[in-house]
Length: 534
Image (cartoon, rainbow, N blue to C red; front, side):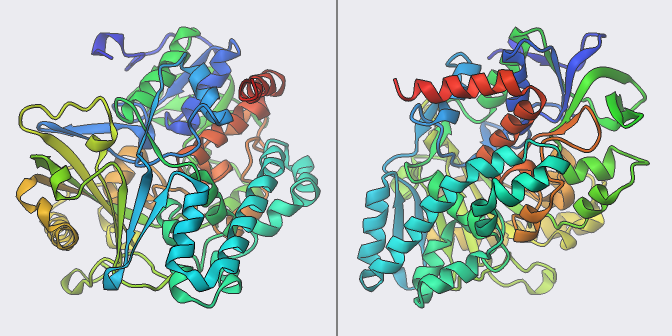
């Protein structure tokens, strides 16, 4: 898409909108595209200079990286959400498989196990690695099936007002609540006494950002189910997601406005009627949807609002922050073992790993796990050119507290102490990563580390958390994290309404649309579901 065709700009028409949506991440844009499909005039507001939230990309020299899309499941035409996204984008959003194996896991002592794109092969891989644990493995997959089957009622309950939703949570979504209330570590411990099998079963906890001793088991089970048929990557790069969904909004007479920092949601007589931007400009709308995170919204955009719903929401803890090492390669990195599959390098077998302890920069241990991705090898449209230009990303979790002193400081001008810390982390991460993939060393031509304050600056999550609120049992028991807020005309979209990740945010956008426009949205979902049975 060339710049002149981009369906966004720094300005927007002066009118009263049907909906104003705050945030252009996956949740906000899904809600916007669905409401646009229903004929509503929607304005999406994005504070960054490019839309997309954690689906946007950035460029340095000759390389381009994504910032949050590494593998997405359930987006093929076999899934309802996949067919829905195809309809909303008129077929413009396409997905490429990561291959027969989408995740590779490496542990001490040379142990490796692959997670494939076939549930039967996945089960067989576990059988082969743990032949004495067949019954535990079978029971795990049975639990995954039970959890995934119970979540539809939970999602439906989350579209209802709290006074009805509390009853629905208790009875309609009772089975889901049972799974949501259990810790991952407790459930896995009941399945098996083998510590290595426990570690492998929860090995993908990095996809939801909460270690097993804090996470809800339902979240772990949903991630397993999410990838049973493999992982995918958007053809053309992750920025295509925003391009296509913003395009859907524009075709219906709506628009997406960048550099639009919402300072306050306007409320009168307990009804939202628009927003005020930084600088004082007011934009009116019949309804407002915030996809900026529930906690972020109530603490930053609703000054003067009081009540237990705000108190209970602000008590919840965000998921851990992260650092990402962006690598630019020159040469055929496939000869060094790189592929479209993601690689997880665990330094120990413990299933109770936390993030990288960098609280004392002068005495940092090795990162307990490194997650690596090679976006250029995932995108079939990537042209490496004669120099064979490719990209890589290495991610691990870190404590926000180490970086909090620099929150609010100007980007690229945070001082010598910050620059020294950043350089030290970059060097240590790169050295550790290259120990696992030494063949890549001669191909590395560029390296740059992003920190939690970079995440805070560009995307504005609470405490730099890429996953928003941590998916603990306490989070899912909170009655206020639902699509419909106690303020009339104010709705929430995004992952904090449902579950974490790209598809969690997508589902959050769907629920916002369903809560605001139930009849039309239900028809869209029904048509997408029926299309799969034809």
